[in-house]
Amino acid sequence: MSIQRVASKWTKTNAILPNPTLAAYIPETRLYTFEHLNEMLAVYGTVYIKPDNGTYGKGVMRAEKLTEPLPPTEEGIIGERTWYVLRYEVDTLTFESLEDLHKVVSARIRKRPYLIQRGIPLLQHEGRPFDLRVLTQMNLRHQWETTLIIGRVAAPDKVVTNHHSGGTARFFNELVAPYLDVKEAVRLEQKLSKMGERVAWQLQKRYPRLKEIGLDVGLDQQIYPWILEVNTRPAIKVFSFLPNKSLYHKIFRYAVGYGRYSSSTGKPARSKRKA
Image (cartoon, rainbow, N blue to C red):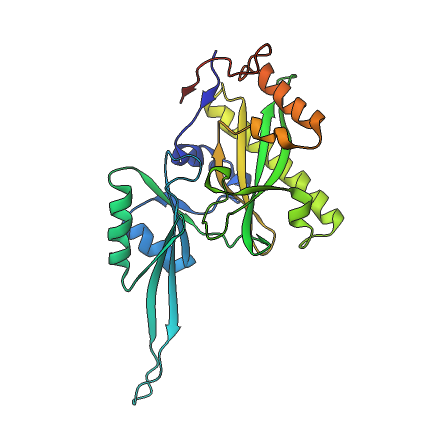
């Protein structure tokens, strides 16, 4: 029986939201429309626009609404100037109206379904934002187990942290050390580990053949964890760089156990079906 995959970010989000404990960690997410863009920028100032079925951070855009006060008029009226910024890969575009920004976004996404998500002001490492990948797998006892939490630092001028977009892996403790003491870091790591397992259990209610997830978690300025995305086909072999080879061997052993890889060849065991 093949491992279940779920491509749609919107579908996965709506499978998690019924759990009130987990829903508290999901940034507001809607289907992309001009009306939703207008409303969410008015509330949050920054949003991410991402393809519903995208991978590797491809197609992700960041939109911002910016304001500055204008000099008072002769009548003493103080107004403000509003403008909009769209970032995509390493490009930055500026617009005087939201309608103009929407035209460019619409031209990029065409007829494909896109989502709009509240922008989270992520913590930074050496001036670049980072998030965390929480890898949770079905272990050999058929229980969910978080096997790895690792950081991903965005490449210079990029809006996403993915390895395929130039992001670099960093160890959890290295990234949180400037923000947390040792005990606080341990508590956060435990919280994220449990979060990965709870998300996996919640998704498994709807997708019983699910065997692994990669939870992308962003930490805001108050060190609050936000679930940015859930990947049901997380990268595994990229973790072969880990100096703790026994940890990587456990991750790979679990993947062999639930059928992702062949024990004899180390290659993908069979074709995968998406849900």
